[in-house]
Length: 576
Image (tube, rainbow, N blue to C red):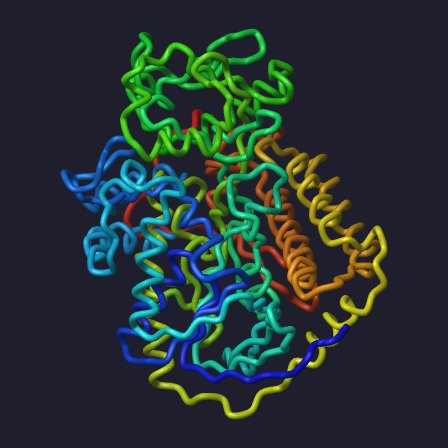
């Protein structure tokens, strides 16, 4: 099978990805009067992490944003300081400051785009809560005349003389090979949670943007930092998704196989008696989830797990805590499917939720390649080594808007490339996959599952040098022994084959970075280096391609606004 025909599209700005960041970028770019094309490998605005998020925003909007599930700050400065402390100082301080000072205005303007419940989406919008953002954004994009192309798989960015000229890709629905001529390109493709066997992300978060940027010559940063959500269902027969019981969830108890309420062994208690999580431990769960996830993993690692998981006990929670909102009641029906969680504990265990590293950007979302911008989870530097609850959605709208503006202004001062190469090498590589005979070692789904297993077992919550080196060797073996047999019988299969290649590359990025960072910090935890080493590792890791090889270097963190405290929010010993 071959591609059916070759197509060309011309636009001022091409945005890849239609989650919160991509949609917000499209709105802002269109505001500047340029022609905008939105592309996504699936249906526009559906299968992305924004839509399936909890729907919480964090910003200095006291009395406006709900503080039911996360702390709301009195000032942008307070937000800024909290984000740096939580990020264990790996954050780019200029990016964090921009986030915190832009956030209030960007949140309040959501009502202009039809977002009705931005104050408390998780209380008012049935699951998936993020639909309350994405659906009105999609409507606004259509009203503004943004062109969209669903089912478009981006294969490679076109870069000439350090300047992006467009991209190559194929269309799943008609089999066309397509060249997009663009003055500006925005990557808003989300993260890479799907590279892990256990995750709480959509199946489309396969790290495509990281792979595209890397192959184009952009620099990435801190790719070892991956955040894990604690309460992901691990009950046989039930979907692998985050629990959400509204108020009831925060009165639940995590127990090991012996029935022990173990969390207090890992985190200092503010009060002994049973109460809401934030009252017991002095912080909202969403603002300390990394520490909870690590405690769960250490219990299982120490042999105190139950069926490789932890028991979540809600049997004691009072009736009134189950009736706090209609959205949560719907979620229980959708996720539990008859499991009576009010009568017996449920198995839960953490899953990857957010990639905190990503493409290196500045406050205008520029990547270092002229005309290429990045926003949302695909970009790194905002959150550092750990992320406060609510900051991810704020990042999508703050930096989505900045990316849209910067891309539009660049397009207005640039001329459209008139002739581009047709991407024969990239096209031929994929036609080989289409021509390969079906062969068991080359089944895309089987290779995906192998990558996911390696990453989960060796590069998950608990890491050490031995496991990381084993993971690297196994990933390289897949590259050498299985990728030559990769095949696709349909263009949908070909999308999955492209994802396999991207997942393998991103898996290597995460593994090499985790191996290089010889300490624990935030969400990155090394069993063989279980301390924060400020003397040697108050450094960012930058990653790029050089002469066909992955090159990593560390650079000292710049202290512009705030120097680090010698205490870790995550209970780690701080050296140096």
